[in-house]
Amino acid sequence: MSHFYVWRPGKIKRWMLTIIAALFTALFLWIETDGSFSVFSSKEEPAALSKGSTKDPNIALTFNISYGNEKVEPILAKLKKHKVKATFFVIGEWAERHPNLLKKITEGGHELGMMGYRYKSYLKMEPEQIRKDLSHAREIFSKLGYKDVKLLRPPSGHFNEDILKLAEDQGYKVIQWSVNPNDWENPGTQKIIDTVMGNTKKGDIILLHASDSVKQTPEALETILPGLKNKGFEYVHVSELISRAEAQSKLVE
Image 1 (cartoon, one colour):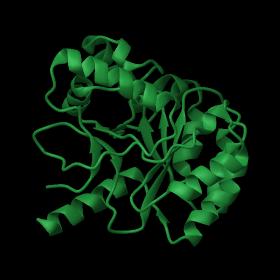
Image 2 (image 1 turned 30 degrees about the vertical axis):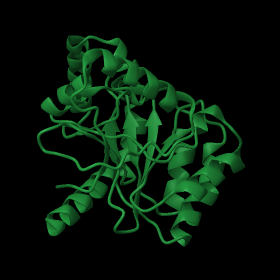
Image 3 (image 1 turned 135 degrees about the horizontal axis):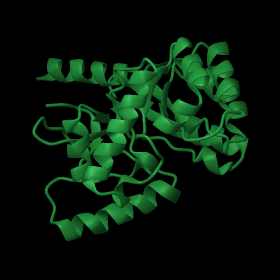
Image 4 (image 1 turned 180 degrees about the vertical axis):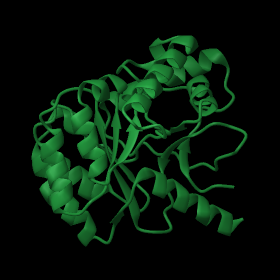
């Protein structure tokens, strides 16, 4: 038995799954939400992790990158200044175009996850197309020297039970989030700060972006990074958040 916070579609009739997927798609796209669903995970069913254990102060800071090269280095500079390690989810196409930036991310001690090869919703793709997309991305990362990328965040956070199963079969752990300030919309630096500072709890996975669309995120990080530390939180990679939660689950069992 695990105490992860996960979203798992479960065994639902196809037509119901379609409706539910559409509702959650809308939710992820425009509602500021914590995105977590408290359930017990099962080894028999695939699940997406949106939150770690609430038993310790660990949190994971994550960044999505789908295009551009202007914001990565300013964000890396903020992380280095405040001695914070994060997890970056990038698409294979971006990694292919910006290998030097990818290298700077990993050389900074940050963890690497991926979002497939192209940033296109998996809900709009057939299973075989998804397999090809993941396979192509895996090939690209491998050629660049990153053979063990096991964390997957589906583009736009869109997925259903079949996508979870497909990803799991290929060895990926699907990662969502529990705190989302929608920084890509540039709602205002203070709004980003207030959302993150006001909603982050133990075990949370924070979603931010490092694509060129974000204009206020680097400035917001100047307050967020030390601010969460001062509140007693400890930044860890997503993989560490998973391993610590698994260890605590074993102790409970």
